Image (tube, rainbow, N blue to C red; front, side):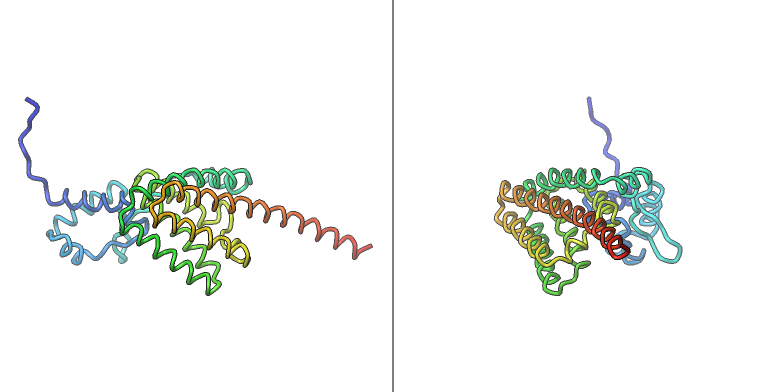
Length: 255
């Protein structure tokens, strides 16, 4: 018969499974510091020896990392998604930039469609809260804040789609974007007309999600990323034209 004796689970295994789930679901993020040992043992209702055993096992498996005198942190597991050589290759070829945006359009369109169907009411509140922060940052005309909130907004949609593999894959892609591997997002938020258009596009995405319209949410994301792709292409052309204009000017004043 396919039955086995029931064995009592060790306390440390329960601790491990809970922390694993928080990392897997993206609630605990890479680089985030865990509470102190005393606080964590009290919150989880376990003894310190059981907690230490669980944390040690998670560190051995590369999910947590300890820093001398600073505590225990979620390991930067996203850093291994792409090799340093591939990242340099991405940064040196324009086609990688536009392939990246096409990839985002496809993946985030799907994520928005899923989020409109599967997100909880609290998921949608998170998205709406971040959009409200975007509106406030827009009024302050702070390009770096707008760029940061832009990433947070898109990642909150991916989180609300409740696909764990997509979540970690796209977080890895956004880390490269934050590091400026593909392009400098802050530049796009320095131009008034572009900034206004971007805010309107994010508003359309948020409105469709709050209305739980899968088709509307996907279309709004795709329209937004098409705009980003076109704006970036136009900016690159303008930069090249300016470089040639500078050469013509320098040549002219020397004649």
